[in-house]
Image (cartoon, rainbow, N blue to C red; front, side, top):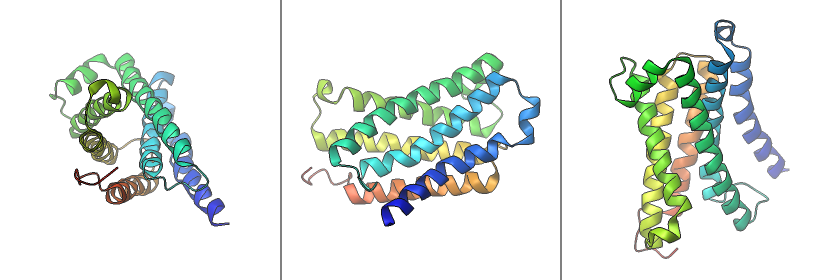
Length: 198
């Protein structure tokens, strides 16, 4: 029963922000590409909730191997969501994206989004090329966790500063859950303890 409640709670946390955004009146003035870019961002934020839960093996009913494989798969999915988010915004307004990438945008949320994006790319590279980089596991895990933490904090601040289609309550709740899940995973895995055995 507890397993069902936990999975249902996770699905609700992921679905409610999407549903709120889907019924937002702001969508009436947006073109399809911009809408798709926005929803890609929401999906990406949702994935940032699932990823630390998988890393810490906190999702019930999943074996460690399944959790690890899903973590890698959803990591790739997260990168795709980020690319779709930025790519859609590029199509609708290239100057705004260029300003954001150059950190000269007048909107504060843009810089946080760019920092989070590059940190996510770095974490993905470490995740995909762990063996080729020949890093000791503890050092690799510290680097990967550090970059993902920057990704999550940057994404949360980015999302909270945007006044868009996500409802403020559902957005805030999702962001809080993302931060709590990340803090729990970092504490459980003790990634900062490089002397600890894996």
